[in-house]
Image (cartoon, rainbow, N blue to C red; front, side, top):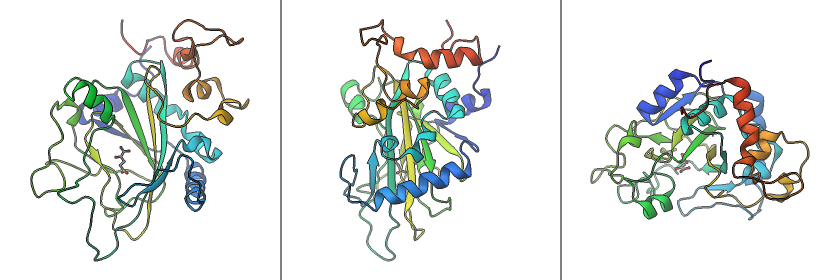
Length: 284
Ligand SMILES: O=C(O)CCC(=O)C(=O)O
């Protein structure tokens, strides 16, 4: 049996450092997530709030803040690709991050996405610092859902194609705000863009007049720490699937709470993958 992941998707990712999965969510899921995002942003909740000096607002750990985000947790089309790209089912969710990027005020002087602060980066800055950019392997896949509509000026995430093969630091020519070859991928309303920790990327320029809303779901190996706050309420729920329980951080434990062998907690995704294919995610 062949891999459950689409070989064209995997080939595009290996070549380009990113791939767009078409129609990964339904319009209903998207609208519900957008409504939830707008509700959350209108509150003065500070738990998990992620406001940055560049005017962005948002939350980390959104799947625990509103059930409307839960359908993004175990999206089957996404999981097939993520498991194949990380060659493992020993995965969990590192972060679910809502990002609201305001539109740049007309005529105002920009303070972000200027040559001194171009915003291009690789994720997992701490890993890059600790190990060196040339030694960091693929550790995580980020899946970007856009809840507001695409347009050339909508500020969707930009990427530098094939940059996961580059081992040097991010370089943007003096006076420029983008590295040569940077693009804004063509992402439709219900699509999701996957990129990895080594992919150079930056938020685009939003001059659309509307706040851009995105949810970034980042999956990585279970031996990497989760970035979001622990969500005991979510963990205590009885209506999640076993795969969802693994992804939110199920540990290597027996049902009675005693310690189980390493990777026991990855059994749900392992079983799900085996149900789809006899080909293991990593070739022996
Ligand atoms: O807001 C964006 O488009 C970019 C987000 C980003 O750079 C990140 O999640 O690391």
